[in-house]
Amino acid sequence: MLFTSNLFVFLFLPLTLGLYYLAARRFRNAILLALSLLFYAWGEPKFIAAMVASIIFNYLMALVVDWRHNNGMSARWFMYLAVAANLAFLFVYKYLNFTVDILNHNPAGFHIAEPKITLPIGISFFTFQAMSYVIDVYRQDVPAQKKPWNVALYVAFFPQLIAGPIVRYTTIEDQINNRKETFTDFSEGVKRFIIGFAKKIILANNMALIAEKAFAMADPQRSVAYAWIGAIAYSFQILFDFSGYSDMAIGLGRMFGFHFLENFNYPYISKSISEFWRRWHMSLGEWFRDYLYFPLGGSRVETKLLLARNLFVVWALTGVWHGASWNFLVWGLMYFGLIVGEKLLNIPKRFKKKYQSALYQAFTLLAVVFGWVLFRAADLPKAVGYMGSMLGLSGNALTDANVVYALREYKWFLIFAALCSTELFKTLPIWLRKLDERAKVSAWKPIYIYIYRVVISIFSILIPLGLFAWSVSFLILGAHNPFIYFNF
Image (cartoon, rainbow, N blue to C red):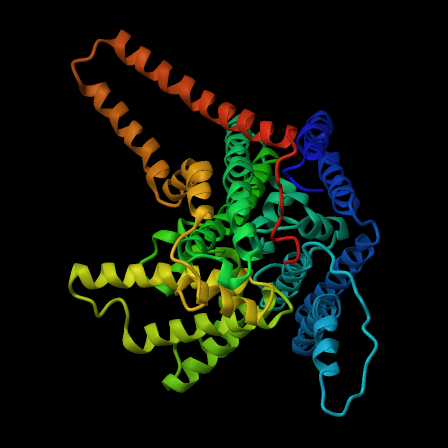
């Protein structure tokens, strides 16, 4: 079940909210857990067993680790066992098919039957969450949770289950039993959900129509201009698809009294590659930082070679985390090379003039766009071919009728996507608040201040309602509605 389906918006969510708020407080977690399991099992019931097995295993391993700590015994090897088992679980479901395919391409000619294992939705997210819980118990950042249903709710809670953000147990340990639902949280949660909903339906889905057509074309038939439009459209699609789902998850969490951390912070305004990854998928970056990069020594190592090693491990695994394909590994290694270069050359701190920083910011954005081509293409040869089209190396025309059509039909979506990629709409409420403060000390009569505040309040309600109605109209009309983070 997807957040952007009529089934979720008009049946599952209202039913869940109704049951939750009508129930006594002591039953609310049980209701959320039961409905979260139903949510996950809706499309493929067979996958629920894999998630439940992961929950039970990590719950028990955390108890063992905690018990050994409390009795003065080492728990290191049990933590290692938990990590190894989680990685093995992820490997079987996500990477075994790819590994067998690699082994079958061998000069000896031997062949291994492909297991044809279907990938459970959201497996990377809930596996990383469950694994971080055991590690945090080992580090004694949190005590082991004695109630298995609380661990199950932490892992399976439907808002963040299939597309993140990756929630740490330390973040919501207290919220599981001691949260307080408020009208302010609920209303802000509804607004945040609508913003994410609109991002996904209005922006990401329309950008997908351009990108899918561009990436499906043969390299010589794709003009230079259309190749760039397709790559830019996909860059917008993946931003608003993923950040939209994160917004919806954060909003849904607030409706039930949970406060999740932010996952995106306008990454396309970044001035460097390192800054981009501090702003993009922040929960994943923080996970790799805290559970891999820092344990390896981070940047506080004796030699630059060790720093490069640490970054190589992190970025190779970041690429592989996103999918079982050579594209993702090369994509991760591309960022390894760029970030190592920034670390060793002290970029962008070494730039003293504004034009140097501006040029490097433009380079950063170009690198990200080319990186998304690697991410989107079906395989490496197709990625190289698409980049060739962007650079005019495929014998392709400079422009064509597809460019005219895309700009005529989607220009306003492209402009709106570009504006939403900046902090414009984030700073607008701040500007309005400042205007409100000025009005208090101005010569305005109280009646004018009152009218002004009423108008602002009306617009703060009408704009989300308008975005929701516009988004729903796309769903009712059966518009294109892909979910590109399905396999992550």
